[in-house]
Length: 158
Image (tube, rainbow, N blue to C red; front, side):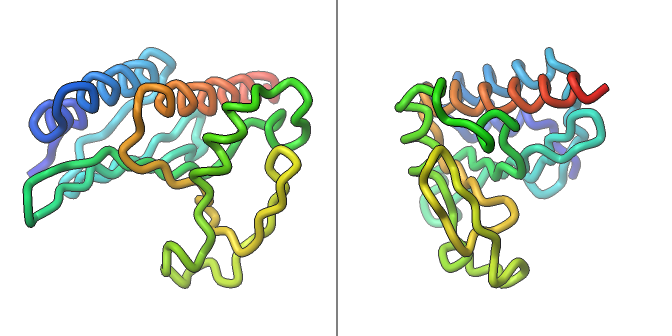
């Protein structure tokens, strides 16, 4: 059964989690992202033919709770090349959500990659090294910053 992302969000997420997820999805859609219907609660977020995120709305079979999980594939170029003008809180959110390969256990990207993110070195990272699980409003705002930065990078490249 094919499902729309908004329908799944409305059905399984509650209160602020629902509101924040719907606002994030709307932000992406207003900026040109389309979400094909899904039959497994996974949606790829592509912009200008580039995969930016994968969204998974995870439903816990034991208690029926749900979370909005996002796996980030790229960061804006400015975030990877400079850290002088980036707010400290943005750096903290990024660092708190980095996923080394040993956490994911996927084995597909072993031994992983190394990245210097805002002056902090991370090793053995998955290709989609940023995993954001059940974000709050502040973290959704951070995710919008990521999208807007990558969109700007793509626009400048054309």
